[in-house]
Image (cartoon, rainbow, N blue to C red):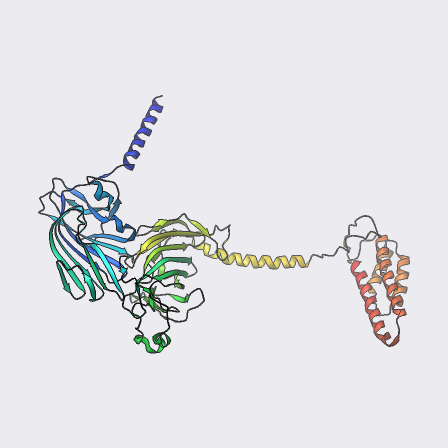
Length: 600
């Protein structure tokens, strides 16, 4: 009973701990303050990048180890990246938190929170000491074309709107904000407190900003002539071969999110003579006519296709991968689609290439663990990606697979893929699949796939090919020696009512008990034919009379009947074709004798 009581007590304690952990919340500490904040918003591409530098001080009564970063919940679906560093450029760990105590319900419902681990505990010293944090925040789909439709030769303008002040759960003592644009052409912008300097507009300094202050916004309506492209879906397939090659294939669904084309599309002069006029073909400022892909230095056997077939309007510049000189230069694929992309237009295409295994896979000399090292993002700089799906097919026999990724991803259960010479016996190739939404060019770090692989398995498939070829020819040789004929093994119904068991004698004839029968069989073996049948018929009649074995007599009797039919049919024929008929008769008699010899 005592043991049962202790067991129940441990179960209750464990359950209570799990209950507390599942419903535990973070207690917000409002003793921190933003003594100085600088924000820089870059609107020079389809990615809205915000760089924030915060000087954090502690004016409260207790030390703090966490800093709460708040972002507007309305923009959460478009959030692509959050990175935080200290002043020494060391990456800081953080986690998303949804259950925070000590805030009003309205602020909690309108915000998403990230708990950042400070480099060291910030002591409560009245604000005399501080720590600097540098955050990078990236959004997609923040630019709205206005007007939403433009003519082919019109310039494209977009609108960007955001909070004027730094959105934070802490009080901000001083704030400076600036916005960087791709051009200095503005239709309108928020002019209060604005300082315009070419392609840059600055605001501030602002002082004593209250937490979660979203009372004012800034709005910019400016010219945007850069590619405004979105990859709605990218599927990247990586197949590893330990015979020295890694095959990579990427399929893209691309659309232009800029202002839609107004009216029907007409092929103009620049479209007809673009290959001759080159850079002069700029009559369509919002159209996208080409894009570049950065590929690994050792990329070879490259192809660029769409649903029609191969697209020849591309240029590939091989990269440089020199281990001796320790320098690398990416390969570049310059791609020109079959038609220019205007706002609202879509296209899809596939690029594929091979990379040497040594460029992407490293092997630990002691543990023999293989590590695949591949860039996480897509090879294009300008487009943003709504959904990136990555599939990695490892060699058959790989095990203990681990995925190491610097970003949050959605892992799918491991599956199997069967390709060339893969089999159920070998288990198939382990297929690792993961996905991520809102991928931008700032996702430029590498992910790793580690696995254990026995290098002797590389010889299994060649051995299987050799064994298969050997088995094939051995089967052919075996079946070639098996006679499918039943004539030698069974008498017809007129000859006998039972099966006969044949045995080979020393001279290869039927096993007969009578010596005289053996002599007669030898005479039959010497018959060659070559006559019209009469001579052969006489010889067979003599032999038939001397035979005692009923099996042999029946075979000879059938041969005699066939020869008689041949001679009878030949005697009825005549005329000019007599010589040809005699030749046919001789050939038929020879065939009957040959068949008789084979049966004996």
